[in-house]
Amino acid sequence: MSMPETTTAIAPTRVAHHRRYLMCRPEHFTVTYKINPWMDPAGPTDTAKAVAQWQKLYDLYLELGHEVELIEPLAGYPDMVYTANGGFLIDGRAYVPKFYFEQRQGEAPAFADWFRANGFDTVEPSEVNEGEGDFLLAGDVILAGTGFRSAGDSHREVHEVFGREVVTLTLVDPRFYHLDTALTVLDPVQGVQNGGPEHVNIAYLPGAFDAASRAILEERFPDAILVSDEDGAVFGLNSASDGYNVIISPRAKGFEKQLRERGYNPITVDLSELLLGGGGIKCCTLELRTLLSERSETKCGAQAE
Ligand SMILES: CN(C)C(=N)NCCC[C@H](N)C(=O)O
Image (tube, rainbow, N blue to C red):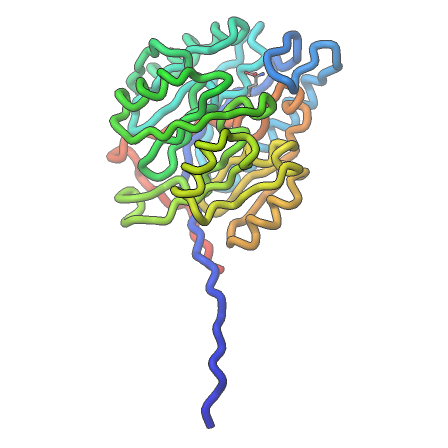
């Protein structure tokens, strides 16, 4: 007797990759000026709460097997906790930020000093750019945001610095003023580092981009997770992925479900206090990409569905 044919959907295998991050304890966190729509200098902030919430993120990264380096927080720079703006690093080279707003400009030399003291070559920028807030490595390609902070000319500069293809994406909604508030790279490691080509995927909020950028994203990432306005509005996309574990806001319920359906492991961390400064999980996390030859281990665990 022949059995009826059945088809079983096979969920992809997701692999967690080892990460090395730079973070900054928010000891001086408060909101005394307004440089994005989330900030209200008249509202109360609670530095102890910000530190406690941040600590949970820090501890989680260590539990997941990642390395976390710390930069000393500077008094008078309450936004320094958002280390993603502190640079953009690939293969041991750090492209230093040039902040758009005066209130943050003093952070740049502190980050540059830290990079040099920790063995990175630094490249001083000519153009305004806010580091990994606007530059995201997706496989071998750099996705680059502009519209609010990083200047379009910084995209040319970042191409010259790293010699990689740079894809310009224009942000149009002031709530999503950095690329990493509107787009997350889910499978950031690709190519030889990982023993062969790997599918790189992203999640994004379509409404945060102009029509031309949306068309580019649709063409390059046809399988991308499209996040709802509701989840985008709670900074759901400001998340950090190691390829399997995706650290997200507990308020991004729909995105959490979408990630599970795709075989990722969403883990929620509440950074509501740091949202008062206009930043979330990814903003507090700068990836330190060292030279390939210095990487001892690229995978820190594997999970199959
Ligand atoms: C995406 N990233 C890195 C961020 N969104 N960073 C948060 C920066 C917040 C700061 N008050 C500012 O407006 O610069």
